[in-house]
Length: 208
Image (cartoon, one colour):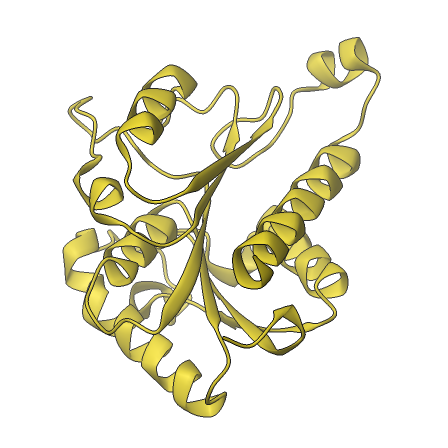
C-alpha cells in the first residue's frame, strides 16, 4: 500500500446541504489545506447536483452512484489508497460502499453519522459489517447520533474505529454562542481540531 503521500480522499456531501453549505465547504477547505500530501476529490450526490431542494432518495438507492465515483477515483489514481469521507447521509452511504467486496476503499471518515433513523431506531447494521479503519466526527449535541449509542455500536464493530467529538456541536457541527463563551473557544478552533484529528487518523490508517 502506498503511504499518505500518495493517498486520495473522496468527500461526499450531505443529502440536502451539498457544496453550498458554508460550514461544510469551510471544513472541506481546511481538510485540503491540512492534507497537503493527499489529493481531495469532492462530489455531490446525484440527488443534489441540480441545486434544487427536493426530498432525497433512501441511502440504499445511492450506493451504486457512490460506488461508481470510488471506482472512477481509483482508476484516476491507480495504486493509491482511497479514503472515503461523507457528511450525514453521505457518510452512511460511504460506509455501505466500503462494506462491499472489491470496494477500493482503505479507510472511511464519517462526519455527523446519522445513527438514529426517523423512527428512533439505531441503524448500525452497515457499521457492523465494516472491516477497514473508520473514524467518526460527531457533535456532542447531535440528536441523530447520541454519543452513548455510538459508543455501544463502536464496541460491537469489527473494524478499528476512532471518535472525535466536537463539544457543543449539533448535527452540522454548529456550536451555540453560549457554549463557546463558556468554554472560551471558537467555532474555528473546534473545526481545526477536527481536521487535525482526521489527518492523524488517515496517517495512522495508511502508514500503520
